[in-house]
Image (cartoon, rainbow over all chains, first blue to last red; front, side, top):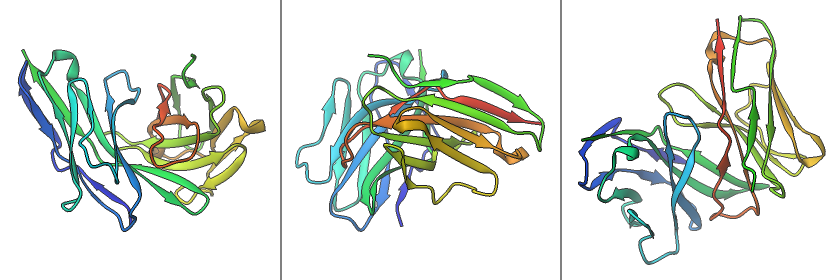
Length: 116
Length: 115
């Protein structure tokens, strides 16, 4: 069964420092995609970064990078130089092919607090 | 480019009443999703449409929830009758081609409170 685990309900980070948000996943498929989404207090989910299961290089998008360790089935999000606006919920998600279509499932999320 | 539109933004009803939510996906997006997000949890997929056909509704409580996608564009999600545990944010999302690397575009959600 598909499963996404985020073990950190909440994290604190000092402004301008880096922070790592953990994510592990479970799948028997060889082809899948891993995503991170940000959900500010306004409620809208915002796409941050994507990593394909066959990608050999870790994905990067500006201050966001994804530390992909396939053998460990982990896909941790690293935010460098944290800003106050980074305070939000962060969700790890996995997308797999299924009969009839592709399905995206989400973890429980990590709430990030950035301190001034 | 316009984003995913959802209405209403908030809804308060009493248990056993009915409620409907509306979603207009991004133009040209073939796949539409309804997710339920209970406070403190991640989104849970309720139903997924490809054009106007249902791809996955395995987690939709079909005794009270129903959804349709008219002409493969707009979609409505209905709850009848509502229960207290249906209090949640209902998120609509859409995407283009079905693939493992396709990101989802979300609307702002409808926050439902059942009293």
